Amino acid sequence: MPTDETIQLMPGYVYMISFVFLAVPDAGNYYQLLPYLNGSPRFLYSVLAAAGSGRTASASASFLTNEALYEPLDFSLLLTYPDTVRNIDITGAVSIYPVAVL
Image 1 (cartoon, rainbow, N blue to C red):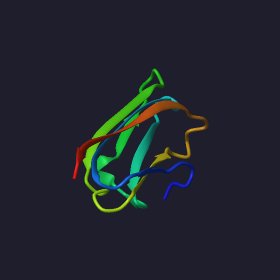
Image 2: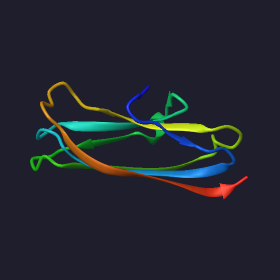
Image 3: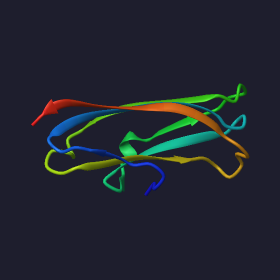
């Protein structure tokens, strides 16, 4: 589970979680973003971005979750890339919105 940064969402809501990232791995390589909810990976919402000859790769995803209905929800993202990537520059944003009150 990622330990660098965790966002805790308050209970009682359905949330929309969106993220978008642009990275510059080595040409022909890739990176993957894997969301974790309450410490468990959510492979269904993961994204993989491959870099072509231009070396840039973008990834984005959005999903709804009702896992914060009765208790707080911890959200984090895990960034992975192959050992062949010597350096990766990445920038992006995460947006989280409550879309329903229950």
